[in-house]
Picture 1 (cartoon, helix red, strand yellow):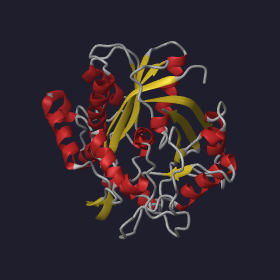
Picture 2 (cartoon, one colour):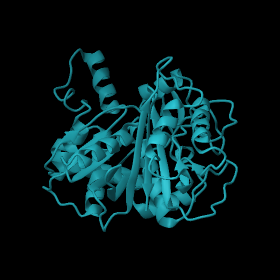
Picture 3 (cartoon, one colour):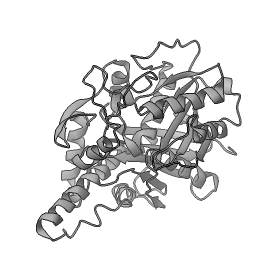
Picture 4 (cartoon, rainbow, N blue to C red):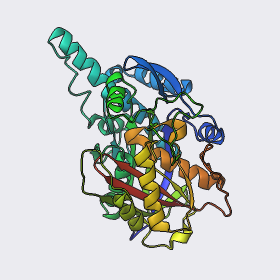
Length: 384
């Protein structure tokens, strides 16, 4: 990369909580953040917002009559963005770009509006404007009173890291000095869960760890969905108030055999990781936060790609999906948050049911991976 990018704040809202202190405390626990909801005609393991976060979302919804008709994916993003902007010291009315995406978008609201249309033959007036994907960034911009470009996109499960790529590109091009980037997802709905079950990837396990992300010997798929949002504040150059830096970015797409395919050794991940690491010696990477969604093929192919890139000298490997599930478009930014927390506390957070990995040096550089349907991989190298 031609110029380093500072991350001056990161904030999230998920089953882990909504403050850095609470989130880190939950990462230190070996207990997953799953609960049970009745979805798709049966009791289903999910990672829902914790009670404090639910309260914050509801307070926001009730604070403005215009917010009452918004989907949860939009409200989640607004809560996280307020927190990030405050941490970074950005002020309302300031000029900064916004790029917050989502894999599924306004899933809950869309399903409700469509069901009402089937029952009555009429669509609600606000059905269209409140279910378009673009209203995530536009409502965040409205709430923060920002000046600057507003972008929303869906690139499946790598959406948030693609937002990071976009922010970096705008900053390096000199078209903006600051960018708020991230992802938001509210996928805990009947139809969304039903789609995952139709793909035969949703967990059926009732064990202590129903999502077996990074268990490379599992015999069945164990993905579980979670809801949440995360954003980070990016600024060009090395800022004194930076909490971490983006040293490298990588991206790649591979040729598909079918809609959800990925090659046996995840060629797209090999390319994205090599691109992100092209300016450093790979021995400098202390840890990797893997995408590892808990599916047989998804976890194993990414691991093989890491082996191809790093050889026998593997960094510490981890993932957070055994704990918070797969938050689709928000997952990449939540992985970045985990990486930053590990660097700040100089403590590796492993997967409790995986073979123990010993931390032998300080954690100063962490690679974060994400990939989505369509074989589109993104890798981001973070450093202190």
